[in-house]
Image (cartoon, rainbow over all chains, first blue to last red; front, side, top):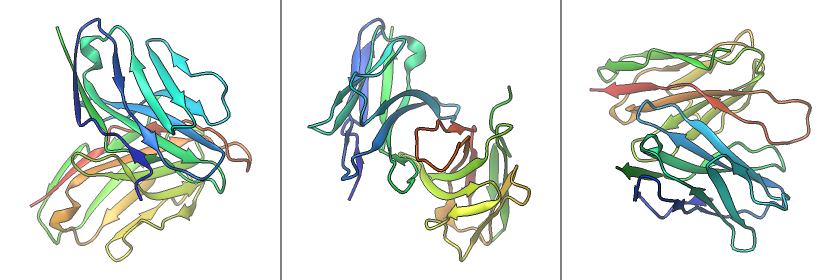
Length: 115
Length: 118
């Protein structure tokens, strides 16, 4: 069973607008972490933001925020004020902390930012 | 501080040939990961090392893939013989795990090696 689902293969947004990238997850572990990574065409995975399952507040990192809805098992990434350099693949990932599992990634969403 | 270094960046070989990828993690990082990323997919873990010990190699196809991290620093991933389906990007990542309690530990990724098998 797929643990991370990203239903948007591609998203388009105009520069300076906000965009939301969807991510839903599946786990029975009460302790887990959710991650978002950016992968530009150069290939390197760049860490953006982290949300722990016990965190009370939604994570924010500069223009990135994570809309964490635990009951719905969703962890959407919100990018405010999009920039041309935001064009890239974006991956949602999860780690289950019981037993020290490693990262499980979704299939990704390609974001294209237009001028 | 230098990031995760991988070489080569690109490799083109014919099927049935051997190939090796090298990774040097961030200095001081005790955990090293090798991931396989197929086109249009997210990375999938092949093997994880804690220092020099392979603690999770359940997804490594051991009939043709092998890996080593002899001194607990840099690592080599080998495929012998390569098949057409091995064409993919091979990513290396490292992190610093402190203690035995599972916790958030950020993984830093290298640029990857793009393998094409003809």
